[in-house]
Figure 1 (cartoon, each protein chain N blue to C red):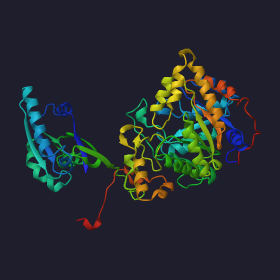
Figure 2 (cartoon, helix red, strand yellow):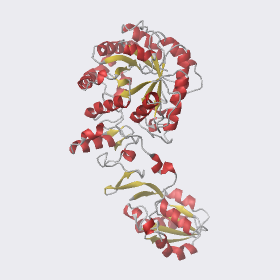
Figure 3 (cartoon, chains in turn brown, green):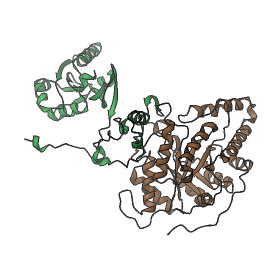
Figure 4 (cartoon, rainbow over the protein chains, first blue to last red):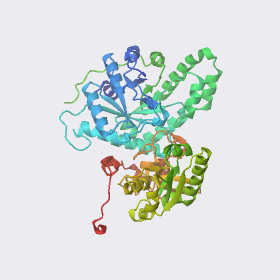
Length: 313
Length: 222
């Protein structure tokens, strides 16, 4: 056991896990986060707090994770390399671990040109792979990235992202292998709509034996409308099949949300059958309240319980 | 070379408010090659400024000079008599040229007429591209001769990020994904396995993060 978080214990015990994203608000109130966490409690194994996603300023992921933790849900804190150098990254992870936030998802981060402060400077002192390697050395070697020893290393479970739809396709696998080699314990994939391409990617993952070295959680985005699907199709690194857009378009306006839930449930059921997929990560940003219904209808409720384990001393 | 671009005329004229004897100083090196601050650009900016003054009924004198190399004191000396007669200098050199001129004439305001953009080269006539991040610790041998520090929008050393699609960067369709280029180049050379190695965090102390830099060559010192 690397850190003994609930997420890790469930994955290790072989359960098909469910995590879901909670987008922190653009303001100083944590109430919405708490509401979402309470809503998801019992339906998800952990909730994932985004770190200023799409480079839009929001309440920080560490504070959001603490709100979630206090509401009784285990958090996964996202941390990106866009806004912090290696000093701040290590410091934030130490702080998070001290608060009981121990699942850390390491991301490079969306470029600031997408967000609401496009004139800002970016950092990118490290990339996500170097961050993973650095955090793993903090945990396992009890050393800071500079090599200096520390007295209380963080007991953390490390995640990373993978995009089965980005280019160059052949190199995506090498990059996943690099993330695993650098210390990723679990992987969250980009939202999957294109099952065929995802299955192809997973078979490459299995051929490389990577599914046995890292827990892969498949990304799910319940689509709300054909427009949402079309928008996602235009996002670099996303693949949305035309027939899915067509299917959504044929549904009368008032019943599209329901169809979106149905699509998400079907995707989960199909992904569950793919060898090497160890869980799903549901990203229903601005639509968090739909998560319990998706989880129930996918037959993933109630969530399994695993005994607590003391984190390694 | 250092690639620069002329500032918009209204920004330049705003700098010159109140000055009546202006020396436009071009540079014969990089900014001549990238058509931003050579003889031709100096003359055309001078003509534009004279016209601008005339339209406003302002009696001002606009003189011109092209210094062979604004970043070397010995070349700057040639322009000393002209600078002495001016009440401000508008440099069409890069940011380095502006500063060397200003250092030589601390009593005279020296203003920049250009925005200095990057270290790059000519891709096609009329098209200059950025190539070097001036990081002080070259890694081009590891990346197929393509610099990810400056050509990847996120300076990734273990790229590409998830936003690379069809060889293009997520930031802008106009930007080529540096990691796609690196991948293709190394694939063509049969060196793909080199990309499996994890490149460690960079020592940024050798870049400008370590403070302003200098190069000292004892063998060349007086």
